[in-house]
Amino acid sequence: MEKIKKQFSGLWAVILGGSSGFGLASVEKLASHGMNIAVLYRETAAADRMVKEKFTALATATEVTIIPLNINALDTSGRESFIQQFSLLAGEKHCVRLLLHSIARGNLKPLVRENNSLEEGLENLLSMEDIQLTTYAMSTSLLDWTRAVLQEGLFHEDARVIGLTSEGAHKYWDSYAAVSIAKASLESLATYMAVEFAKYGLKTNLIQAGITETPSLNRIPGSTELIDMAKIRNPSGRITQPVDVANAVYLLCTKEAAWINGSLIHVDGGEHCC
Image 1 (cartoon, rainbow, N blue to C red):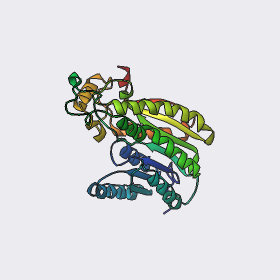
Image 2 (tube, rainbow, N blue to C red):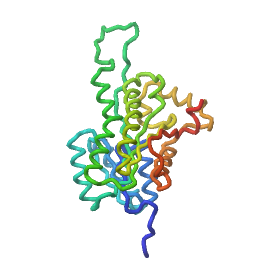
Image 3 (cartoon, rainbow, N blue to C red):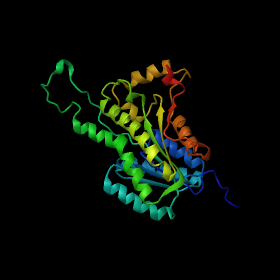
Image 4 (spheres, rainbow, N blue to C red):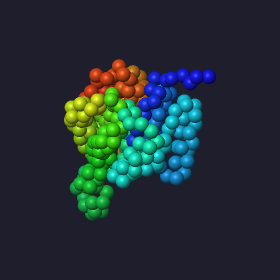
C-alpha cells in the first residue's frame, strides 16, 4: 500500500529543549503531521531511557523520523557536532522548516535579602554570572543556533524560527529577575532577527504562553500562586496547556503563515488582557 503523504512530509524540525513541556508537546504535534524531528535535551541517564522510548514509540506511530539527542545545546562543540551529524542523517540540504528554541535553563535567585543582610554571603543572591548564563541559555543562544543552521545550508526556503517568552519579561515574579532579563532580551533579539534573516526566507516569531503548569514553571518560587491566580484571571476559564502552544507552533509552520514575521503571539486564551 502506498504511504500517504502528510502535510510536512520530507521536512524537519530542530527542537531545542524537547523532553518536556512546550517542546515535547510540539514534537508530538508536528510528528502527527508528518514532520521529521531532531530533538535536543538534557536529562539524566535514567530519564533519558524513558525519553528515548517515548520518542521511539511516537516515531513508529506517526511514521516519521525522530532523532533524540541528549546533549548540551548551549555548548559550542555540542552544537557543531549536531550540525555535522544532522547533515549526514537528513541526507539533504534545505530541509529544516522549523528551529524551535524551548530551552528552560536559568537561575532563580533574589537580588537582595530582606533587610539587605549579607551575613550569609552572596552565594544565594543573583550574580552577574547568573544573569549572563541565563540570558545565553534562554535568549541569545537562539542567534548562534540560527546562524549555524543557516551557514550549513539546512534551512528550507520558507523556514520558521520560534522562541518562547513569558509575561514575566514585563511583570514582577519572585526570584525571576534573571529569566525576566533573558526574556526581555529575547524579545529585542527576535525583532532584529526578523529583519536581518528575512532575506534568507526565515520568519522569526515569539510565542508568549499563558501560565502553564510545566516542570519549568514548577521550579519558580510561588508557582502555585501563579497557577491559582491564572485560573481566576483567565477569561477562558482555564490555564494554558502545553498542547495550546504546540498548536500555535504548528500553525506558524504552515505555508499560510509565511507572511507572519517579527510577531509576538499571545497563546493564553486572553489572559494577557486581564
